[in-house]
Image (spheres, rainbow, N blue to C red):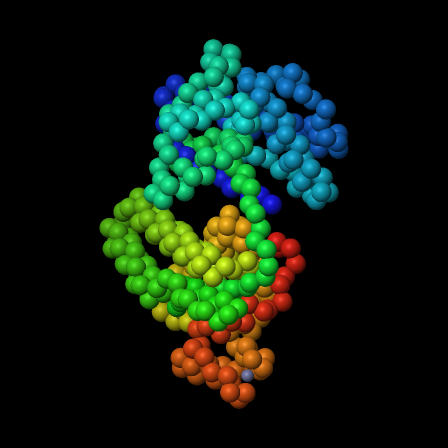
Length: 358
Ligand SMILES: [Zn+2]
């Protein structure tokens, strides 16, 4: 078993390097689009090699463009040419043999005076929790360089071998707003994660900050505030997923079960219109973080059907609505209402494969 993940690193090209990268990225996607167009016209995959492609790119990069074009074509053929994909976002890709990385520089062949020459570009491994430094010790895969806003980003794909844990010890995890996450193990250990009320308060503050800025028509500041809120939410998701996986490790869990959720779940109570956005959170992202952190530990993640999970009695399967904080059933079962979901998720029917809808 292995897990492929992407590490993002900020790079600081000089002005000259940046303009070369910009040109190369445009050439790269043009080369792909041309190849894809040819293949779609002929309805067959290309036989071309880097020698047949006459664009100013190093041959390793041309080869990568051929690989990318073939996979775009393959997808188009699969959906019977219903849509002809055209790449727009400039990007340039190097395979793992054509570049090297030493934590301070990425050395890549770039075009200088019409010739490919290996050039070191400064790299910044900004890393709060040493995650990137840890990951970059593994075997490095393809390198993509692209521009986000006016920053240059290198994305390195990394394959990490994982050893699946033996045995079956299940933990159910229920994600929500009031309680961001609840975990219950199959031997009834319970843990709550995050603080829903604090999150709501924090987001209300972001919101009122933007409202004030809106009155003063500070559009850039509003965008910055929105970005800051997004980063903060992502950070919360990183922290919660980390603690969930640590809790699973402590309890020797081999399988974590999550509900298969739509990207954004909306709660029913959105009465105060201006607070509507306080009731949305990307459970999809949090699930993804849990999944990849768990997989790195050899813990499997399975998705279950979300129907009725917080209303069904874990003991007799009767449906009940919880009164107040307690969930009570005629059969005598009684528990805190917030843990019922996670209890049921443990044994709910698992959905096929990895069909985690976005
Ligand atoms: Zn019952």
